[in-house]
Length: 440
Image (cartoon, rainbow, N blue to C red; front, side, top):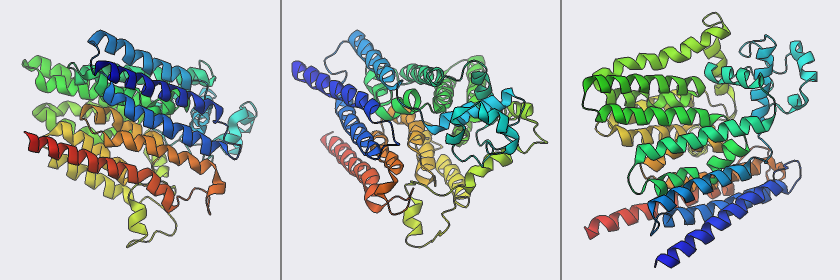
């Protein structure tokens, strides 16, 4: 039995690595057939990943588990480094560049004529997405962009930083989960093709937020488990600091604040720091005279895209001909609060549900958004999110607009490709859990 498991794990991992490496041959999406081949390779790599992780840790010593865990995690990220980055990176570089030149990214959009001289020195300026929009990232992220821009504009530098942050998040997750099975549990995150591609390949900066968020959750667990009052307070302050940093990088981290308050109880007063830090980081950009948070609200004016839920409502009872999404965010916020209150007795599980509601009710769902929940899903053993992380690679078919009647419009078959396997996984997991309960 041991030999069969090891062979199965080796085959699955080998296939994942080979198929993931194949993405390097299909990342030039200016060519008509490349997005289809890219998605096919990513799907197959994801299937191999889904087969590998369940076999990991079976009949393998803890030391060998650690070596294999980190070896695969690092190799996957090294394979991803040569991939063509997403156009999001060009905006990071651009907003850092204009800050270095003395411009405020919350006041001036990339397309503004005042930036023509800078644009001539930035070959990727024409590839910046939504050039009509001012900065939509929180101030902590913008300060990072400025800092990185002052060092180098090479994409590889950004990728290495984001990949290292990703690996550090995995290290913290190992501490959070603990136990003999921790390496297999965290492999659901560290070996995930979408997580690897999003940060080491596409160069999205969200790994910085995830690192701070996982650190905050770990500190929260330590605070609630500590016996001495002083220790509880010290960990609580660290919770506030780390969540403040996370929120200053990505507002999605704020969806966990109410659950943090529930867990900390009367020590929740320290969470004022989590609000103070993003506010403090706003001052270099002219806050409160400069409407930084008004600039962030531009995101709500974009068209709905690749969502999991609202398309169904719009096609049945609530038409939305202009595909605007601003009216969905108040509903999302109310639902996050309601779910958080429902899990007063189990705040750990509540964190999974709160982030899950954010993703399910988000009117815009880019694949790297799904990575936000993967560390929490690994912690709470919610494996269906890993299936979604694989099927969401279908999103990149949007780059082959010849597949659709209208560019950036998801046809029913594409929605089915993303959602149906997740629903099937939920049914299977539910059946397995029911069987296990009946067996006991």
